[in-house]
Length: 162
Image (cartoon, rainbow, N blue to C red; front, side, top):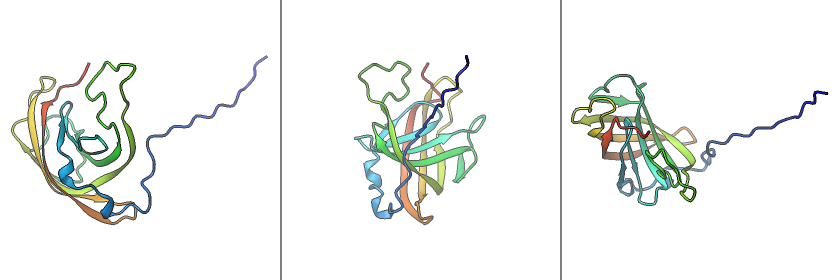
């Protein structure tokens, strides 16, 4: 006899940004002092890995030397969470290692990205920097707030764990 058993699947990828989140809740840009290499993007966080700026290149081929955000080849977000770079660029996760948890993210809706240097050949890994200036995030109420300007280096651009 065939029996059907109802199954409920709940998937959570972070919480909704609280409606009361305002420009006053944004961290001081100076706290984003830690740089994280690997992949095709630029990653920065505070020392505690609770806030992060992620500028991820998702286009094909080599990126343009300068773009205005938003841009279809770039995903740019400001993230809050815990252990945001735990196991970063690591394909071997040990039993007692923390797991990144994203509480919420805000989209970066304006700004300029200027690459400093030449992108290394794919999969070889090498240093590339970005000057991200006048970044602006969109808040939950639809208003915008300045996030600031940053220079971030990815010492392993184009390198992927595996």
